[in-house]
Image (cartoon, rainbow, N blue to C red; front, side, top):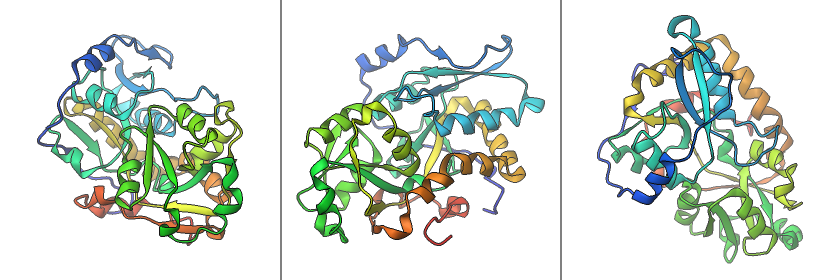
Length: 311
């Protein structure tokens, strides 16, 4: 895949094998979408997205900014659109909503996993929306670990420590594969609380997530580690139901235009570049982990990745 070109095909999954939770599905149907953009005429394309979990004015999801950019780039060809937000949900409920096409043209950023390739109802655009920025993880930690963390330089030194992740996050599977102990919870807010209470030792986030959340009262003034960083490849793509092909084609074309004219990288830099530099990754003990979930993923997406260590 050449730079500036995402590809002609949106990838469609095959073989959906997960059992549906009827109660969750019914609950999703009754969640009223919340409009976060000025309503357009009835002929507008409705596109649904996720609202941020933390209610900070600064915590606007980068995926929504990218989605809006791609749609803006294609108004002349495809016409007006309307963005609608839905409350945040955990990964399991997200997959139910996507698989059953609950919301009109629901398009969400999700971590790629080979297992999702078995789901015949889903499709994705193989363009890394964060250019790999969220693959570098810096950690909130239990307050008493400040001195201890300085001495950790190798993966095996994490033995006995517990890492907090959201239920169903790819991060949990990756950490377990690398023999780390994981504690799951349903929300970011509860993970902050569990870390503050000492039930979790490390709660690791991408740099842009870390610095935004550090300012939020829900982070409870947790200590931020300044010596460690984890790295594992974590490609983030737009996922949707396969029946949203019209919307997906439009978003893919908009991404191609935005990448070629530089507006995507301008938006990406505004969101990620400063926080990557602020994380001072070159001076940290960088511990690399293997991601077993992407063995079958074509590596074309790596063309777009940004390397903050060697820049």
